[in-house]
Image 1 (cartoon, rainbow, N blue to C red):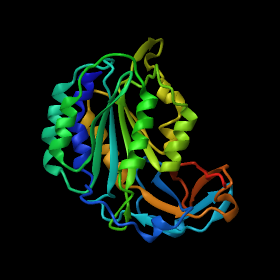
Image 2 (image 1 turned 90 degrees about the vertical axis):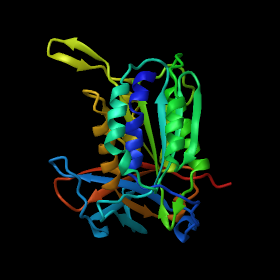
Image 3 (image 1 turned 180 degrees about the vertical axis):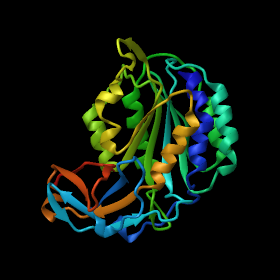
Image 4 (image 1 turned 45 degrees about the vertical axis):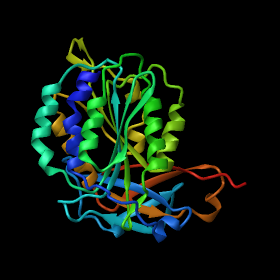
Length: 318
């Protein structure tokens, strides 16, 4: 895997270059201090697959277990040259299952190194039959490059789900939650062939943790194919079947024709186009220990909605 993982390193730096970098630990805002607030990142696309970015608060309805709730907080990115501050963990498959594409990473690096902006935090981990932390959260591009350079083709089995679980833990425990009154969007970008062999974490528990922490998972998969009567067909992976990416509001990007730069630009554009909505569940649901369904309705025909979480699990009252 390492060859391809190293191949995407400059592309990983590209996504950092397209997104703002947090320089200081933020002050806690009044919104964060309000207990029980549930926040959802929402992306809306039209029938042509284009992002819809001109919606207002009145265009959205939040359903909690099928019943509408008032929108307590709404944010959109009107300035398309900017984006929200992020906390991102890059998770690299170093199990030896991926090939060598060093030239691609060099090309991607030349493309956008000059675009680096200073408004987000990034961490880098690798995984085979264990999880390796190459860099904890930093806004320093040099440290990030050194972290990617430390990744090596270690070999071994693949603990994909355990790596995602560790990334979520890092986001919850180590990354600041807000910066200058703005909420940091939590993102995991995992680069893998999509197969897991030795993880111990339960997939449903992993999705629940991601939802409760407000983490969106994007996957960049290097797919395998089989020949069929109709031609070349992609082999579904365990990551596809798990629903982890879709149920956290992310997208899977299969690498076609070694175009990593296009993929990471697409992830950055996706984040730029998102809306932030928050609401308070009914008082009876704040600490009942139950899982509640969340659905976002858009008051505009012909659009598709993707949300970062589809459920809310309340803490158990003691």
